[in-house]
Image (tube, rainbow, N blue to C red):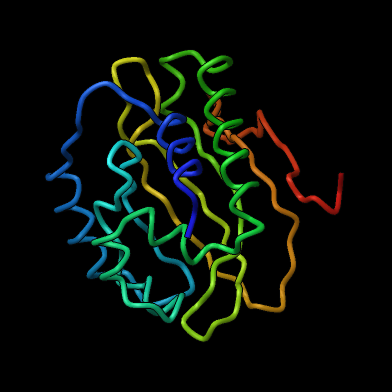
Length: 191
């Protein structure tokens, strides 16, 4: 389980003014999830201000071998508890770097065109650590333009696949093509 310091750092990265309610978005996502096939990808609606998952798709259990109820009730604390301990520090550093880059380099009106990608390992229901590639797209910004609610899609890879821990920011340009505007490798073996 991550330390209080870890949780405090995460909270400071996504510190925001005010609370958020996305009831209508969640209703539409639930409707959409009913039609999606079972596969190796699941998605969530992440509320960084409350450290919660406002929605966890049905494929979470198929992908991880874990019941989604704990994700729904315990939120980020549960997710961090199944994350590989050595990946937690890199994960937090990546989030800090992604938010710093966004707030410093991306104009307010362009932040809705961003996609964040990073990876880490989680322990599946069989006790094996598997790589997860997470793509998060902001769907709600606070008054200061910080992304605080995100739609995240997670692809779970076979336990035998090894990846360096990396993070990127991609920005959709005027030609509707994503361009990588930030990339960093957090793999300790590469430093």
